[in-house]
Image (tube, rainbow, N blue to C red; front, side, top):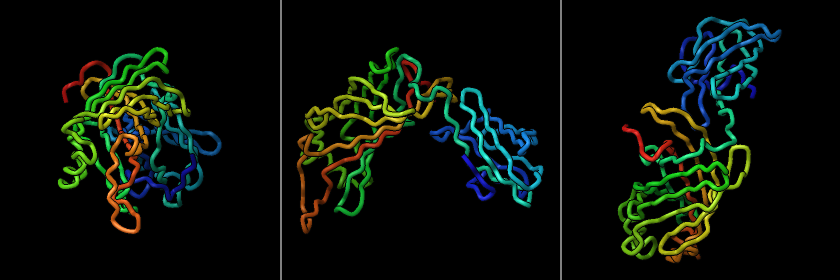
Length: 287
């Protein structure tokens, strides 16, 4: 990673010194990070800790020129970059993103409970062939059981179909009707995995079955593991992002109003997007 004095840092402060923001890959501040600066001879010229917001801010000007910036934090892999100090004595390192050590692995074995307050389950559909409509389900529960053999881990989720929210009451009513989700007969969507397989250094494919609109289909989730860490309520959390693409016709939702020139009002595919936080244990801590 190479940064310059025109970097994207926005930590604020005066006109001299060094600015940086240290974050995890899912955007959390790394409060215990330490930033060390060395000159081109390897001599340390600055060492500063991050504050509670993950911001490193110094005021002493540095001589103009190139420097090596090293950011370390317990539990994270260190990262080094080159930063240029301008003639004003200022350098904006910008956002420094730390990856957790062992980040290619899933969280420790055991039960993890999905936290719906800090998670989202949404879907995106094309509208009129030119734009997208986004919706989210407001009520859902789930759990993850991490096995010693990672590939045998289990993911389960239950989504209340009637809680779909697209920001338009008339559209939501249509989506919950018999044309689409038909929540009167099929009030829940359920997903249960059958296994995991590695798909990259921090990615996994979750294999499983989705029950929607009374139809069961094999659906794979593209899962990115974002890290694990403590929360303010005494728990331990793991963060994930998952996506999948569904075809409406696979789940017997064949409503297909054509508005003009063969263009459907609503696209035939849905992109599912999930941002998940799971708490270690069977229960969620008080928040």
